[in-house]
Image (cartoon, rainbow, N blue to C red):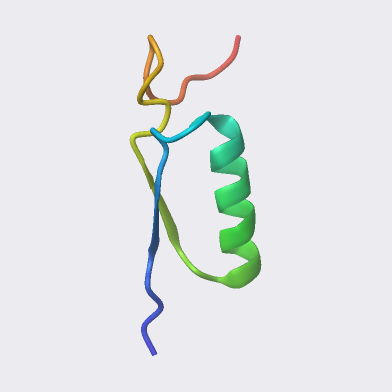
Length: 52
């Protein structure tokens, strides 16, 4: 049986770290792979970055 991948659009709403954390948590619990596209798309500096 092949599991389908859930694709999440990170450009909707807040679209940052909380979307990432929630998606990874639910993926780990359910075993369903997730793919997050356009994370932080509406921000001045799109994509994920490390805090210093």
